[in-house]
Length: 240
Image (cartoon, rainbow, N blue to C red; front, top):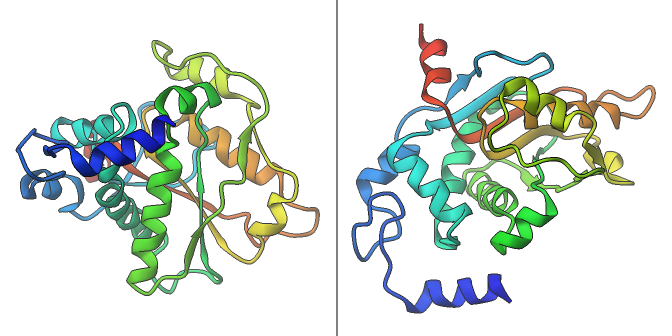
């Protein structure tokens, strides 16, 4: 009901830019340029955890980009899913350039805790992934979303935990749903999320994907990752 109400109110209430608050537009030109106006880069958190796949991000997590992500994720500004998906699609293209590998792109969202999804009324990462897959298909890339990862145990709230504590908190927390591994065969897997901070969620998601590989089969063993945003410092290191 909460998600339905947000969809309806997004159509009938006055709209303001999710990044700066400018009226009569969900995302103004300036905030759009901040979100997807530059070429996505490879990013590495500091410290970089072992087991982290290669990650590409569309934009630094600051200013307008931070505001847009929070507006979509925490305040239910669902109309921002399309521009966020466009940004994520750019990061996916950087992670897997055209002509790389075989088979379709398979976007696997990193799952949030059920209680967090329930409190927000929507699954932000999955919604953005669906928008990104649509954007990729419109530009000639074969892409689909397979939300095969799920939580196998409860985890503590990540807020306030440092990088090492987050890795410990998430270790062994995810698994591929029964039958999910078979759906992934023949495609190029890209883990997707709205935000990377320490990289702990992507490390655990990558571990779960590799653990699900069937004996003697390695067609989807190469796992990449793409996110909308990452801390500015991770971009700066990559550019040095």
